[in-house]
Amino acid sequence: MSRISAIDTAKLSWGNPPDWILALGQTCDELKSQHQTAKRIGYSATAVNQLLKNKYPGNLGKVEDKVRAALMTDKVECPVLGEINSTQCLDTQVRPFSAASSQRVQLWKACQTCKRNLNN
Image (cartoon, rainbow, N blue to C red):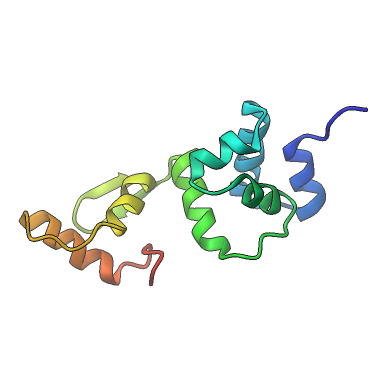
């Protein structure tokens, strides 16, 4: 008996899975590993498995942003830097305040009210 693919698992569990779940499943299938996929998005293999099976109890929005940033390379518009990729956006959000440069101050202020900030 052959193993069911991650994409098929997502389709069976979600019905019509969102694009980011399909990207997650595709990456699992390409790498042949939920563990390796999990490392790429900064979550556990258990979380990846739960996501594919539509049983993840946590904040889907946060995971979606991580998947898009790590696996789908979305571009976003930053009010300070202009067009940047999602990974840079997520990395900037978690940086603590620093007065080391005027740009860091501008970024910190912009992130505090940005709709893309996972903490807002």
